[in-house]
Amino acid sequence: MVETVMPVTRDQAGVARVVLRADAIVSAVFGAICLAFVRPIDRFLGLDAPVVAVALGVVSLLYAAVLFWLTRQPLLTRGQVMVPALLNTAWVVITAVMLATGQPDLTTTGSWVIAIVADGAGALATAQWLARRRMA
Image 1 (tube, rainbow, N blue to C red):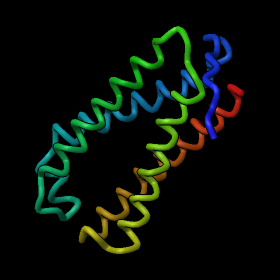
Image 2 (image 1 turned 180 degrees about the horizontal axis):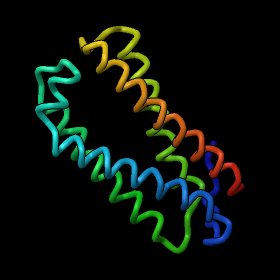
Image 3 (image 1 turned 120 degrees about the vertical axis):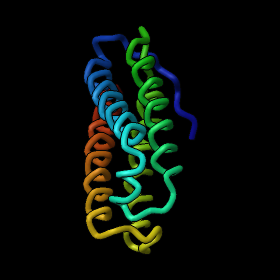
């Protein structure tokens, strides 16, 4: 099914902009922390791959930049709100699979931390889906 692109005015997309901006701020902070504390995060999670924290940091900062840019556009479509909602939903699903399978082999504390991060992503995804629905 093809969705018709219906631009929404700034007022109609106000909630979506706020939610996307919140996601951008959280992602920027997360990315900066990942890059600033690569080694401690690696040890804390129980990984022997600092490249994971670096990759998460870089991708999170790029994602945040795109979201900030998106919130500054004069028109915002439902499809533009759907993409971050899908990405945050995917984050939650991937985290659940990682925790259920035990791969990668994380410390107990590391498992709790990524579960809490996934809870935050789930809250953002829920808010984004609701904001998208409100734009209809």
